[in-house]
Amino acid sequence: MGGSRNKTKWIMVSTAMIALLIFFARIGNTAPFEDIMVRATAPLTASAAYAWRAASGLGTTAFDMKNAREEVAVLREENQQLQETVMKNAELIRENEALRAQMGVGAARERTLMDAKLIAFDPLSFTHYAVINRGARDGVREQMPVIMPGDVVFGKIKNVHETTSEVMLITDNENKVSGVTASDTASGVLAGMQGGALLLDLIEKSAVISPDELVVTSGLDGVYPRGLIIGTIIKIISQEKGIFQQAHLTPAYENTLPSIVFIITGQQ
Amino acid sequence: MNVAIFFVIGIAVVVQLTAAHPMQALGAPFNFVLAGAVLSGFFYGNYRGVAIAVFVAGLVLDAYSGAPYGTITAGLLAATTVPAVLSNIVPREHFLHFLFYSIIGTLSFYGTALITMKAANFSFSIPWTAAARAIMVAIAGMVVLYGIYQWSILLKNRRNGR
Image 1: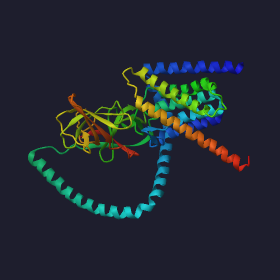
Image 2: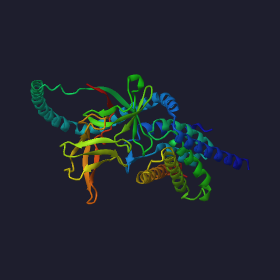
Image 3: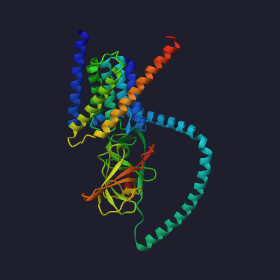
Image 4: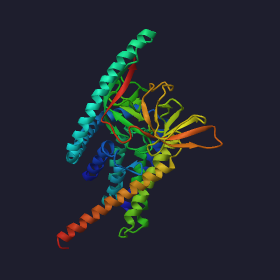
């Protein structure tokens, strides 16, 4: 009897709490409380993330030892080829600078980057966020683009806390990015699709696009600078009646979850 | 209050935030905290204790999520409360009891989370396909964990000659 009454009381309290939480979610303005929770738990999460990364790294290393010799031979050959490319590129850079000077065009824009480590991923699968170990104290501000090594777009800063920040990943449904194909033949607006893929929408019907083509940022959205790698086209959707085409993309960062990312803090 | 419940849920929170992301099936990462909440409720039966543990866990997880604050907490509370209320429909001895419990728990979690997201932003369109995938992955994962648990008991009993 008493147990049943206790159970009823508990059910009523739980239901009231759920209703209250829905009400607070509707009102919003929970940032200060969220900030306290992140500050209190970020050291533990960061330590766990580093430990997990180290442990998974050890496992991978042990697993990869078998193929190490073959890989060393391949890498040596690649290294030689890359050295030759570097030499050629250095020559091209000098030539480019000389031409810019002759034509009176300023030097190419240089980015100011700040490195950051990932400490947590979004626990809910409907929103795509990650938390990094840089915050307002380090000069991070909302809307700053976040990239991976190799100029690959990772996302943009959405919420800034004192010591940490939330990054809205490029695969999030709410993250709209202006993109253009690497050949500059087609442009459109990108947004995340469920399942981790991307949708390039509003492509002109007459524009020429093909599968496996690389899509980069166009710089028109005012958030991401031009030329950052977004992903590769895997499927094209073109309907007879519509005035636009669509394309599905695989994001470039998909299979290589980074431990270090870079925040673009400024462009000179 | 059982300390073990807090320990299980606490570990699940850390794993969910750091290691769960690459562990995806059908494009959805496995929800360790939901599994921890449902399994703790099922095995310990101390629903109030589980509810307090998942409430704290939800507040932490919400701080790291892009969803409106309270979404995960509300979902986890529902995942603890609803199956506890409905669990008497299928007798505890019946082999389908756990499956029923985990299905109700998972549906309650995702249902409440989506309602909270919709309430916070009315223009939010419910991602039905992603939700269905996440639900399937969660239930399958819980059934696998339950199977491993039962199998370990069977092995232990055999070793003891029972």
